[in-house]
Length: 450
Image 1 (cartoon, rainbow, N blue to C red):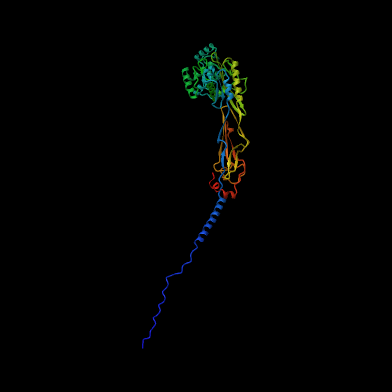
Image 2 (image 1 turned 30 degrees about the vertical axis):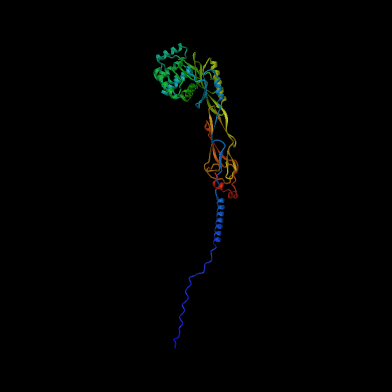
């Protein structure tokens, strides 16, 4: 019997190594959605940034330089002085300006006594209103008196041994122009003429009186000379000394020893108001000289006028020339506008190109200027942008703002303290910030404008 065939067991089918293909990704569609979303995000971000971005400040441009100087014209006083035939100088006490028609030195005669007393008071001060030290009249003083009388000089003889105060010598030297007391005073301080002249040289070098030549203290020596402009400087120095200023302003003075009341030789007393003295001088060579000072109202300003006339032929010529010079000084002050009412000084240009006028807030301002003087106005812009008046650096940065917002300040300065003033510099019209639509369509101006 044949063996029964046993069927071979079936092997399980081998696992297939082939996998179904994965579905294809639609790459194009996925990328398209991402870009769109980004664009939406960017657009939204741009809109937000445009909406919240601070607006740049308006740019202020001034119409003129920030600092402007206004000077007074001196043509009229210059013409008045130049018209004089002999040495002449005029000016004011408070400054250094002098108008003169010549720098030539001329004999000054008894104006020399101003130098004498200033130099002696510099060496040995005597306070105004006090007597100072006492000098006992010597035989040498008396001998000089006799020589002055013989030479037709002004002198007031007193006995040897008389006690004389420094103040009395100053009064006699400066009011009636006594030669004997001027010399006695100088030598009582310095000892002799050489020491006196040495002190004069040192003093004039310090004071810058280059044209001054002095050979003795009275002016009797015809070589005593100076230019008219240096005599005017001498007058300023005299008024700066309280003791001298007090005495030269005396129309008369009463003295003992039988002298009595003596009159000031200044011919302007009684001929012109406001005279505060100074000094005359006269010799046959020098002619008639006068340095004079006078207070005056210069359109509301209190000033002191100075005039020097030298070498006039007669006393009348001296008086006439002096009155003419003071008349020229009276006419010289000028009321000068330094700021107009709501004056425009510049423009503020906003980010969207609108131009806003920039004004000085106020009713205007004037100053009184004398020839040679000047006033200055300076515009100082705020560094932190526009601000409310009185609140600098508030930084409105171009947003809506009413007219009258401050953008700076105008500073005025002049010859007097009352000229020192300040005014707000403000916008002359309202500022309207650009709308949202403008912001969206003007990115360059919004983010880079300047």
